[in-house]
Image 1 (cartoon, rainbow, N blue to C red):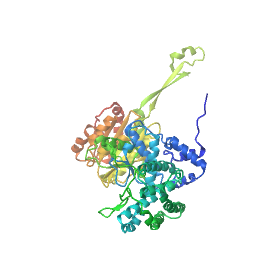
Image 2 (image 1 turned 120 degrees about the vertical axis):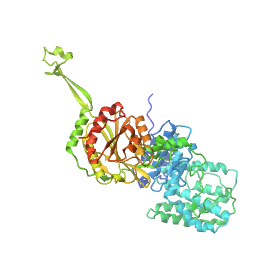
Image 3 (image 1 turned 30 degrees about the horizontal axis):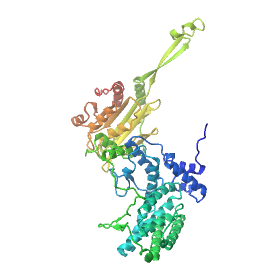
Amino acid sequence: MWKPKKQLPIKMAMAITATKSRHLKTSAPEFSVLKAQDSDAFRIHSEMAIRVGISAYWRKNTSSMEAAELANLLRALRKVAGHLGENAGRIEYTGMSAACEDAILIDPETVMGTYPVPVEQVDLLVGIIVHEALHRIEWSDHVWKLLEPAMAKLPPLHRVIFQKIVRTGEDIYIDLKSDQGVFGLYAKIAREKFISKELNRLAKAGPSVDDLVLRWQIHAFDGMKNRQQPSAYDMLLNDFAMVTADLRSLLGATSSGVLKRCEHRADLFLSVWKKMEKAICSLKIIDKQLCWFRSTKGDSLPPEKTSGTACKKSGTMPPLLAREVETHLAADSVDMTPIIRSVVGFDDETVVPMSRWDFNIPSHPVIDRKMVGRLRAIFSHYADRNFLVSRGLAAGRIDRRRLYRAHLNGRCFQAIDRIPKLDWNVALLIDASGSMRGNKWQMVENTVANIHKAFTGYQNRLSAWAYFEVNSISMISRLVQKNRLFSVPPSGQTASGQAIIAAATMMPADVNRKIMIHITDGESNYGCDVSFGKQYCRQKNIYLITLGCGYKNKPAMQQQYGRTLQFIDYFEQLPNAMESLFKWAFLYGARGSCQIPEIRLG
């Protein structure tokens, strides 16, 4: 018997749709329309989504390969944190090269082993990331810094108790903040996981400060109030309930800035401490470790992370796996250094940081219509042909398959048209170092514009890249974007080897004939050796041609580029040289030839 599929309730479907990582284009305030109201309907829908797995509705980019899946998961977590607001912090796996002390670190052991990562584990990680990111957005560290003078005057044990109150109060405030939108569903999963674990740990310890602040956190949210508790907690929990009410009212004060909210929370914690100091200090302390303290250098260290509010740092990702994850992440990231290291070698010290950055400086070239016409003729002449056969014609060549029509209507002829198949895939890689300033760069811009004009139409693919160096970082920028031409300010040194690898990586992989023309006025003097770029192009079946313009030390360049190098004496010869290069590239490049005949100009 046919059974209809279970459909998600309307409110829950709206909430899940809003959290789709692929389509999250709204800002954080827009999630306020999906507030977690205290109605029974919303509570039922939320519990249903938690049982099914919230992330299953939006996380579709999964993989059974370990490195790819870990990279996809980290990318999804970063998208979630990005939609929470600014200052969310960087998210990394422990053991990655980019991980720093201020980053939100994820223990890789919590996600390794099963691929794709189970939905329940993803929901828990999203909840942890939401909690930690909101701590940074709401400046929890600033609250601790405001309370430092008061904590310095307290005895050691009193300081430990006061810090437990502040840490728990900040966690409650952050979870109340997340409950204003759909991200509160994820935070609830992480919070309940942490509370159940702490309850098991403190079950046999008896009344204590640790158990009291945990009960406070339980009573601050619905669904976990009906638990037995010692009678000694009654008066103290009533005082904490007033603090929770003040924290809720603080969330409604949207007009106050984040600094004012931090000051209000600091004053609130100080007032409740003065009120209950004598009563709460009579309870024992199980964990006497400080949550916040000053280092010997005078810098304040952040609160100690707990297993429920942050990821542990116990596990470290294996170096080889961390490198593979970084390489997958760099495919759609600004930082291309992991891709370069994966080709050259992760231990190669010659590799310098490399980044892609598309400048929006408009280009103002001078178009040579005669050159555009000659280039179009070259593209058409050397292109493959598609044979188009027209049958049943009244004149032309006799079609043996239509001879029976000669006595009927005389249409027994055919015509075969050979239409050029213009599907060239060409990448222009241009040296934009400091030596290319002035007339050189203007000539290059004009040449790129003429080639772009000639390539327009059909199925041709033209990409143009310029590479240069700024502040010890090798940059590569796109010169053709959405059929528009742009320019870059030439500067810095020449990192040709890394630029060739980067440009080859960004060429389409679904075509057979790939040609890269590299224009430079000197040898590579920065970054990895050019040999790595040449070898990588051979692996990817890319026909690499290097055109040396106006460089006197030709032996040095020949030693770097080998047989794929050609020279011209002046930049004014560049247009004619490009025409000759296209002829030889279209003739021999598609056949895999590595040696270029000498260019003859004039």
